[in-house]
Picture 1 (spheres, rainbow, N blue to C red):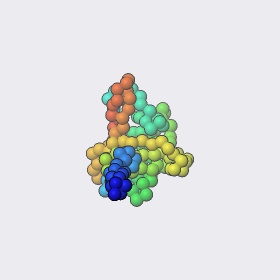
Picture 2: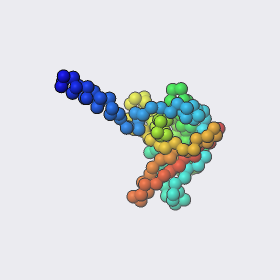
Picture 3: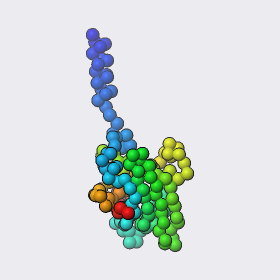
Picture 4: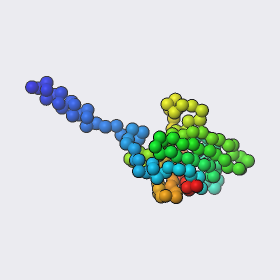
Length: 158
């Protein structure tokens, strides 16, 4: 009898524990459907953006993302992003992406860039904010002079 009680207690403890990993949570399909379509980054803002440079997504200076085009396909969580800022300091870049929105309101992004999605083991977790039919924001955390600050990417529907 003690053995059965111990197994029951052990199974309850195992079932009761769940992962709190941001990448393992359930999807927010309703929000994903709202993001479906073509978008442009209208602005990038962070405290000190007038005089500091930030390398966004390990690709380019954050200002190069203004005017970039993004497409999101909600039924397979794939898409594409393309940097096309005409500034002479910005390089063009285009890549397939995978993405999803979890129940905690986080936008999880992988930039694939000539790899299979399963082979890319780095990505970005951004806070999704102010979602409407025509706009939304992605907020990332950056380190500025030892202080954590928010960088906000504002998207507008094309």
